[in-house]
Image (cartoon, rainbow, N blue to C red; front, side, top):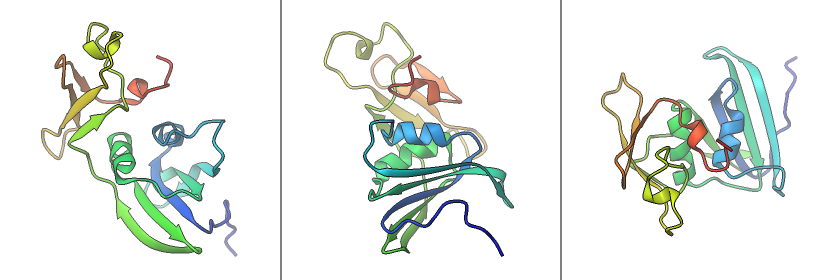
Length: 159
């Protein structure tokens, strides 16, 4: 008999197929930290036939927005989002890359207008050169290009 590692949720969101060790970054994207009032379950290094090991995040009482799912696609493009109502999956979808990211990432250029006292939100255009290459982000204001891992640029990452 198979044992459940995390109990089912009544209403909320289950984010599955998160690459091993990236659940913390998913929580950061969702704005979930120690001050959250939501019931959150995180399973890390769960055995998976497809991925060998994966992470899973369950957020009780909250259905994530599509723009939040699009940001998650930047760090975990194969994630599956399940919306749960009354213990049933009512919607299930794979995430897809956004065209633009506003107010979620910090620009790494210290001279960018978004890193001054001006009231300007960060804005990145998402460029996917081809299916075989990972996305590049270009700052809308200073044109700085960011490639690869963007988790260090997430607001509140402390870097």
